[in-house]
Image 1: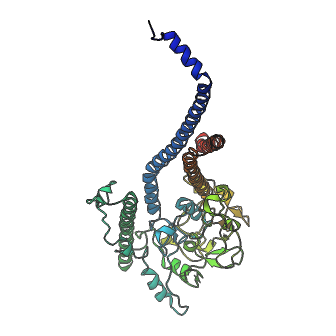
Image 2 (image 1 turned 180 degrees about the vertical axis):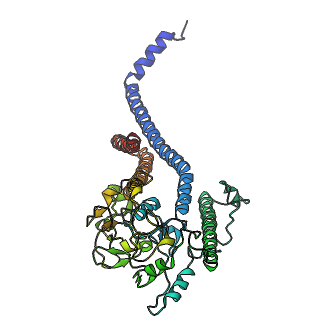
Length: 469
C-alpha cells in the first residue's frame, strides 16, 4: 500500500484527533434539536388551538345564523295582532308604539300570562281623552281606532336596500359585489340589512292581512245593526258598545308613553305607578358588563367570570328589582275563557269564566317552550276560583333566558382571551428563538403549560352543555 494510509488507520487517526472536541458539539446539537422539537410541538399546539377556535366559531356561526333569522321571523309573527285573540277587551300582541328591535321579550310567555289574566292585555290606546265627551262621541272615537299602529312604508334605514322575492329563503344573490371589492365584514353587514328590510316588509304584509279582516268585520257588524237583524249574526269577537264605554270611560294615562288606556293597568309594586304592558315589556336587565370597580383595568386583563347583569330598576323611583302587580277587574271579564265581547253587558252576572274549560285554562301554566311560569309569579291574594288575585311579575319573568345570555357572553370573552393568549405565546416563541438557550427553554416550558391549561379549560366548557343535553 506504500505511503497511502489504510482505512483503519484513517478512522483511528480521525478518532484520536476529534474525540475531545467532537463530544461537546454533539451535546449542544442534541440540546438544540430537542429545543427546536419542543418549540415545534408548542408552536403546533398554538396553531392547532387557534385553528380549532376559528373552526368552532365558523361552524357555530354557520349553524346559528339561519336559526337566529328564523327565530326573529317567528318573533315577528307572534307580534301580529289577531282581533279574535282578545282578553278582557285587549289583545295578546302590542299596538306598535315601539320599534321591533325593542320587542325582544318572550312573546309566548307574555301571551300565556295575559291569557291567565296575570298581566294586563295590550290595549289599543287613545291619543287623548276628555272627560266631557258624551257616550256617543267616545264610542265613535273607539270605533275609529286601528287594530295596529300604522307602519311607515319607506324607512330611511332601508332606503336603497333590495328585498327581492319575500317568499324565497335565499337572498344572498341580492348583495351587489360585482366589482369583488366588498370585504367579508361589508358582505355580512349588507346581508343583515337585507334581512331586516325583508322582515320589515313581511311584518307589514302579515299585519295588513289582519287589519283588513278587522275592518271588514266592523263594516259587517255595522250593516247588520243598520238592518235591525238582531245580534245573533254579529261577529262575536268585536266589542259591544257597553264594553267600549266600560273600558275607555275614566281611563288612565301611562306616565311613560303618555297614552290613555282602560283603568285596569299594571302597577309598579314599589311606588304604585300605573304602567301599560307595552311599556313594561321594554324594561329589562342591563347588558352583561364588568363591575364598575373593574373599569380601570384593560379589557383583556379582566376575568370574564366577573361579568354581571343587574336586575331592572323601576323607571319611576329607580328601586332595585323592578316588579309590577296586576289585579284583573271582574267587571271587565270577556273574551278568552269568558263571554264573547259582543255579548258584554255592564254589571251582567254572565261575565264569568267558563268553568267547563278549567282544564284548558290550567294547560297554559307552561309556555310552549316548557318553562314553568308559576315559579316566576307571586300571588299576593287568594281566591278559590282563581279570580281577582293580585299577581307580581318581574322583567325576568318575560325574559327567562337572561342567564343563558350572560353565560354566552362569558364564553365569548373567554374564547377571545384564549385566542389572545395563544397569539401572545406564538410571538414569544419567535422572540425566544434568539435568546439565551436555558432561559428560552424555561419560557417554553411555562408557555406550553399555559397553553395546555387554556385548552383543557375551554374543552371542558364546550363539552359541558353537550353533556347536559
